[in-house]
Image (cartoon, rainbow, N blue to C red; front, side, top):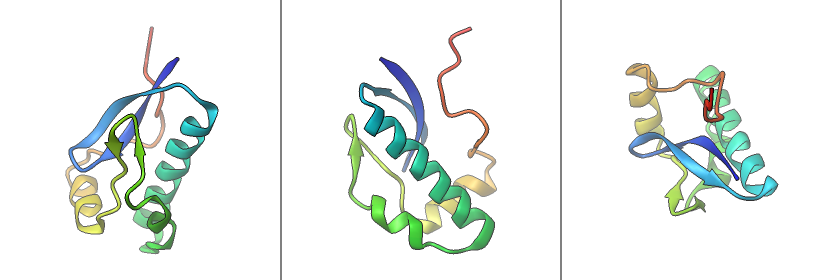
Length: 84
């Protein structure tokens, strides 16, 4: 089992990930968020609306994404838990 940072309404949280599919979904969500931040294109975020991983709901609210970005809460480089 691994833990990955996942973006929720409350900001990034560490979510337990037990399947490769869940890990891929979290990664795809981060890519969609980054794409939105870089381009303003919200289309990729829509597919995550209402989706959950381990009771954590993916953030798709654009105003909240913008707010967290402005606060410097979004880090795209490392989404895996640091276990060192």
